[in-house]
Image (cartoon, rainbow, N blue to C red; front, side, top):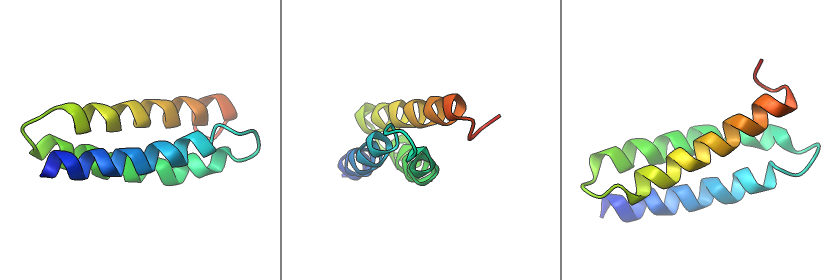
Length: 73
């Protein structure tokens, strides 16, 4: 059950992170990072790895976009 919740949170964070890939909307990734971090924490509590891995992917995408855009120095 926790894995399904983690996957759902990861999908929501991924949609937000995809919107953050649009030029001039990169600040939206600051919203996606904490959501994905919470999803990863919930995914760590479950037995399966799918939700955790999805949220780690979202964290990497959002973090790299922020680094390339100058949001994280």
